[in-house]
Length: 616
Image (tube, rainbow, N blue to C red):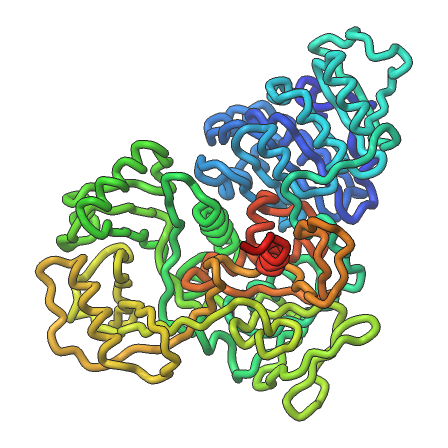
């Protein structure tokens, strides 16, 4: 038995509440060094009647170090194996939401790093129990406590330490009823005592949070059958995440094998995007990059379960002015070395193994992956819950009473299910339900270069162009951004690729190289962000005068994973996780405002708002 100093008192034990449940969600306001987490994990793991899945949402101002975790784990022998598993998945110390899978993905931890009150407002979840035993919550504005009522399910429990009158009243107004409410909210609770409450909303109306992802109102699908259209990175990742959550999936692909279009390139590079203002695109790329690394480790690892190498990525500045700006960015953010390092020109050249034109960012966990092999690895892991339909074109999408029916170009039924996920890039617009999505195809030509004709670089090199280390005697360089739809190789695109590569490799001349490479078409949205979630129905009625995303009509059971542009490798796992979390009614893996930024209805909402503006 674990001693009381690191556990809740026995009469507030969570075990009776999570037993025989499909899912249980716990929000901890003060992760600290992880002692309460280890205690909860062990208690849950040792309970034969535990919930099938435990979501542990943890707020922390800054990430605990591995040393802190190790010290906490040393207190009890039983925690050593827990620490080892957690340590292997621990993220770099960067802000934002971090989703971590433990114990065969039955335990899902979401670390929320940053200001607690701000993070609290960004949570999309239905919380069964709140644990507020540390001091972090006492630094929040009292009004922030009302958010707990918006997150709580009926009869959610609240254990809170150091409760004073103003905070108690705020929680009561939010709908929490305390065991000792008869004392009229006196300050008899001391810093060491725990006040206990249950959520039973009957005091004030519930208010919607400022940022509301549509998933807060999503229908949780009890019939867990889905059709995924498209077997590239987006569709393969969707199959993998769905099956992991117990769904049965039909995968429809017009080609005879996976990853034959944009996902069919010989190599794709993966790294995050940095910015001085840490804008939504940078925050999303950080979350996607780190989540992808975790999912790939769980698949078996880069270079083992699928082809590629975590050899690092070196991103070279465009010119001296750009380098100065990036140097200032590095001094401002001071990223941890395991995430990103700024190197001057000399250091960057040494790392590259060849002179480079400027300093650059080094991402030590970055690298390259062969997308086709990754798609195959994700699909292979799905087992008999996945039924594939290769060489069949989904031409018609029909709504039935309880779901959707997919027919081919001859009108023959391929599959039916309550849920359909469009993961077929710009081809999705062939369906009437998606024809107005603002997606466009951008041509990208990659150049193949024999290893002896290009410098033998150590990491992936990128900037205005990219170059991968040799694999099976060949390097990939590129890629062009062309506005035409020519599917065959063009000399001018190859010349442009080589010229941009020569700009970042001083002294290297491409010479006369044979025309070799591959053409693919990126699916790009108008604002360069993916479209993840339920598709809007523009013909549906909206009774709200000034609607938000959650108020717009949606096609029931129809979802999209589209618009990954040039970052499909890192987008695919996170986007699939976000969508499956919405389908299952689980806590979202990212902040509410970021989920809203990816909502496919955002363009329709903007159009409706512009139409209501007075004409000039």
